[in-house]
Structure formats: C-alpha cells, structure tokens
Length: 98
Image (cartoon, rainbow, N blue to C red; front, side, top):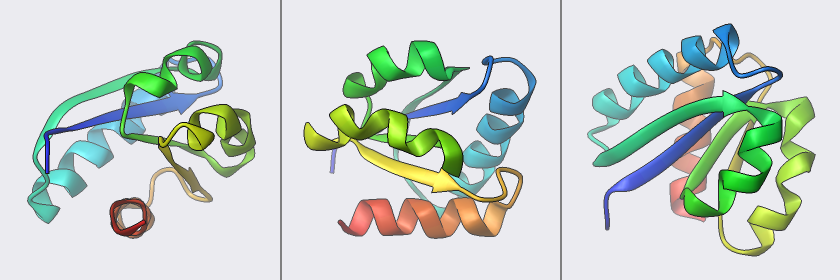
C-alpha cells in the first residue's frame, strides 16, 4: 500500500482540527500506518482539497459535505467524538478495509 494522505477538517480549521490531527498522528503511529501527510484545515477548504487525500476525518455532521469526494474514491470518516482515539482508530480501520 502506498503512503497514506490524511485530511482532518473542522468548522474553521483552527483549534479542533489541530487537536484531531494530533490524535490521528498518535493513532496512526500505534496502528503502524505508513502516513505521508496529515493536513488539517477548515471544511470549506477541505471540500475542494479532499480528492487529493486517501481519507478525510471530520465531525459526523460535516461528513455529508464530502459526498463528491467519496464518489471519486476518497474514504470519509465521520467522528461522533473527535477527541476519541478509540473512535479514530475504529474509523481508520473501517476506511482501510473498504
């Protein structure tokens, strides 16, 4: 498998996405994933950039905004609790097994 490119989005791309990114980094390392890049940004930027990433992680309520990217093969992980490492891990496992 090629190196993974992950995109983390939140409402305005500042605090929450940075915190999710840090959790995603920890989880990816624990899972032994080969990650090339983890980018965090606002959903507005993420919608147009998502096609350049393998997996998008965001709050569940933002997940429907990435339907176009899903149709083109990008996996979207909608998180109920964006701070939950367990939920991030489960979401990544599910996305990688699709």
